[in-house]
Amino acid sequence: MTIKVFNREKIVSKGIISELRKICSRILCHANVLGYSKDDQFAIHLALEEAVVNAVRHGNKQDTEKDVVIEYELSPEKIELWVTDQGGGFKLDDVADPRSGENIYKAGGRGVLLIKSYMNSVEYNKTGNSVHMTKLNSKPA
Amino acid sequence: MEQLKPRISVYYAQNATVVTLTDEKLLEDDDIKALEESIMPLVDDSRINLVIDFSNVQFLSSAVLGLLIRISKKISENKGRLKFCCINSKIFDIFKITRLDEIFEIYDDAKKALQSLK
Image (cartoon, rainbow over all chains, first blue to last red; front, side, top):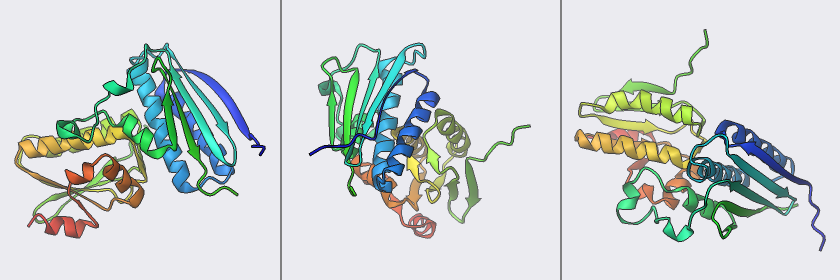
C-alpha cells in the first residue's frame, strides 16, 4: 500500500515558545485541510503544546538561544511528529506518575502523561531529548 | 493605548464568588500569569467560596492545571471551598486522564455548583 505524504517539513527554531506555537498552528492547519476531525486536531494540538513546552522549559532549561526542532510528516492516514531539544535529555522512568499519591497535588509533571494519552504512539530517543509521536486519523477518507 | 482584554468576569452570588474564564484558549504563559494575577487577589488573605466557570474554555494545557492546583491550595489554606462548572467534554477528559476530577468538584452549571456550597 502506498501512503501519500502530503506534507513533510523540518523546522529549526530558537527555543521561544511563542514562535514554536506558530509552527504548531501551521501543522494544525495542514491537518485540518486533510480532514482530521476536531477531536484529532485537539489531540495533536495538546500533545504538541506539551512537547514543545517540555523541550523549552526542561530540555533547553529556558535558554532561548538553544534550538528546538519540530519535524512532521502528515498524510491522510496519520501524522508523525518529532520534537527535539538541545538538552542533555532525561530518563522516562524518572518521571513520577502525576496521578499517584501526593503527586496529584503537585502543580507540574503532567505533560508526558497527556502526550501519551492523546497520541497513538510515543517514543523517546535513547538520550531523552527527542520525542516521536504518532496520531492516526480517526476518520480517514 | 492598547486595550487590555479582561481574563475573567466576576459576580458575587449569595454564598460565593463566581469567576468566569473569558479566554477560549489557555496556554500562553502570559495568559496564565494574567489569570493568576486576576484570581489570586480574590482568594488571598480571606476565606472565600469560589466557583470557576469554564464555559468559554475550549483548550487548556497542563500549565493551567498547575494554576488550578495552586488556587485550590490557597483557598484551602484560608478554609474556603472551590468548585468548577461548565467544563466541556474535551476539557473534562483532561481532568479525567490526570485524575484531577477526583480532587476537584465539578458541576454541570453554576447553579448546581452554588447549591453545593449551601
